[in-house]
Amino acid sequence: MKFIAYSIIFLEGGALLSYELMAAKMYTPHVGSTLYVWTSILTLTLISLAISYRLSQFFIDKKQWKILPIALIVAGLYILLLVFTRNEILALTYRMELKAASLFTGVVLLFIPILCMGITSPMISAKLASLDETDGNQRAGNSAGIIYGIGTLSGVLLTLLCLFALMPIIGVNFVIVILALMLLLSGTLSYFLIKNQHD
Image (cartoon, rainbow, N blue to C red):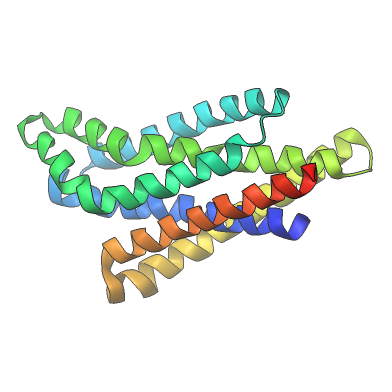
């Protein structure tokens, strides 16, 4: 059970941070790589995560665990769809002022996938805490520490892999496809994680 949970976090954590990097590359042909671009990337990422953390608490309280695989699969499919449609959608920015174009691009590229990915760590942490037999506060702290540690480490490793190894060889689009497949796999694993607990 824990191995599956940690695998989900590893895949999602790596995909999240790596996708932020790839999003910056997707910005460039349309709005460049100015300070406005990086500000919009950071702003949209943090807003999406803040909302997703609040939503995850709602789903945890309601024990709506099924939202986890749904969110991860939506994130994977959305990113996959962007590979084929982003140029047509982001062409709308050509008539916008730079600041507005940067924010619009951020909303299109980041808001939905980051929102969907952001619920993963809190929900997995809560799920593991509920299965632990140690003291309640201790188990919650232990689970959160391990989960966020794995997610952060995975993000660093996968980002370095994407930037220095994969992107120069196979290009941005194929890296994005790989990240989307990682999310689809994590969504499938989370489905079995939830299903096994209720069987």
